[in-house]
Length: 233
Image (cartoon, rainbow, N blue to C red):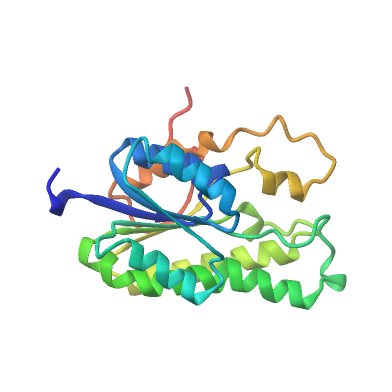
């Protein structure tokens, strides 16, 4: 593969769950990776596993920190084809109704789930325009449905979706996808339902084929459900 053909991706929240599952598939497909997470130990384990498949740089930190976002883009070293904004936070667990929602926590939700993805996109856009690359913002059906108790997380994902729509209208050289991966058996999903058995939810790997379909296709910018992009077996 020549230098001009090298594919490179930034994936946030890639130490576990969907981010890690997608990182493994991208590594197998030959992408160089820049990954991040807040948990240093989990991130190092992910880096070590992925390093057996591809070149990978792990940058520990919080996406709500502007300096951390800058380090992520710098680690791409001038070449970027794909940005996956996967990192997000749930908020309190169990989730309170909006009447009792702590506003300081709501501010943090918006900083992490809406402002941080845009901040990273802004830094990455020059490279993504050059490569005619792709932005994937991971969203949720909670952005569309008025589930009781999901006012904080759901409204933050709704904000991310509207931001994605506008970005898609403004950026003709970059494909912008906002993707609902569906319910998954992940730590965040368990935190959303404390004490419940969520073992019947599919693993995050079940959503990866649909994401890869988008990454490797020329589908127009828009909202997609990952599991609807792959024919049922």
